[in-house]
Length: 311
Ligand code: MTE
Image (cartoon, rainbow, N blue to C red; front, side, top):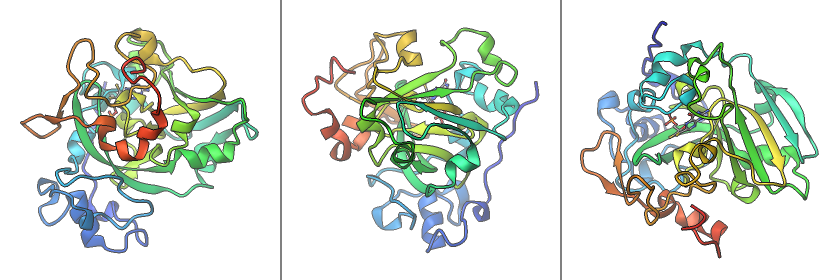
């Protein structure tokens, strides 16, 4: 099988005209100044790109993770379980044309071509910390539409309490599907109020260009206060339901992967601690923050819940 080679985007490709008012600041914030990707400066609030939306809660020590790492160190079990498998083998995935089905308890269900599905919404750029349950993390400049914007358009009915995401499971495009690494198709879910939170993003791009296949082309979820496995890749269906959806990782190992999966340094994974993480590119580990550092924005969603039981 031929290997997919990923090239870094040129600076000119990641700065759409008219979107960024200050190109120099944008490039600096993206780590793409004079030194290109090697520079990766620390991001400060005043360096943040002028974008539609804002880079929520970036901290002084957050550096954008280089494109090479974001696109070569991945989990996407439909292509194999090694971190390099998605970049090596996802060239067979065909993200165009792509259809997304919206159904279940909503007033405006339908089957949409991706372009029509995205058209009514505003595409935004957001730089988020991205924390995997395996205790590595990145800082990634995602591009997408607020999930809330899609949900409002779908019109969930009053009985709808959850949103389920189902992803592609096509053995002709995904070599890992022949093996039962997980129950295919991969599914994920959110409570409706979590899904409506302004931080939750349906992602279509990274580093200002369309998502590479290994990152979940053409449509994936990012919920930055939750472990990365909530970020379902290559979504084909969004369904509103009254019951809590079954999720792929919970079905695979319910004692290790709960439905809520909020980043929580106080609740260890049965096989390793969650109190620290290794930011890709760093040598020394850093402390993991409750809700991945987004507690101020999201902690109230869980008022009154026992987050040790509801991990
Ligand atoms: N989505 C699908 N369809 N299949 C997967 O195996 N892995 C999840 C999530 N989404 C996965 C998936 C896990 S475990 C993580 S950590 C993130 O994708 C990784 O996203 P990234 O490779 O873009 O960093």
